[in-house]
Length: 118
Image 1 (spheres, one colour):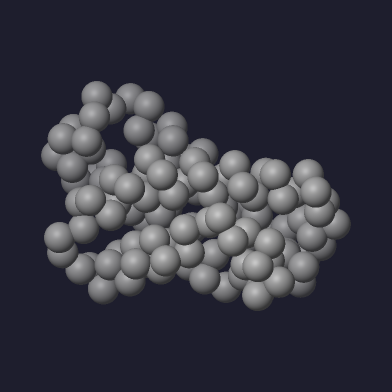
Image 2 (cartoon, rainbow, N blue to C red; image 1 turned 90 degrees about the vertical axis):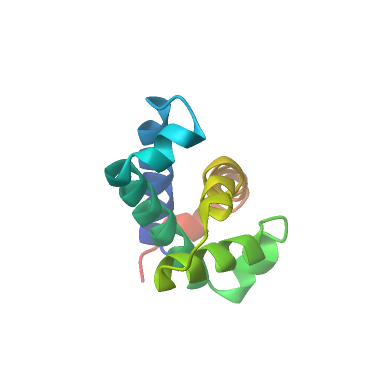
């Protein structure tokens, strides 16, 4: 089972990331804004770390999720690895929306997993 808190962390970080990017004109503007980039990267790292702690049964239910991509992004962000522009951009435009969509679908199929806190 998944703790409701993990779901809320993913949901919140995904929404914040999306709203931060809504005001920007594109990739160059994001990477030119140190404060916005730092905030986006913090939320991406929070999502990656949350997903890294999910139980195996849940991982098996989300085989479509790019677990490798999340793991690579987590490693880069935790170690301050450079360059990482491509990975951050991929995280923003592929990992975040796909993850939120897949989890929303799983939540509809398995609502009990998202109601319990452990």
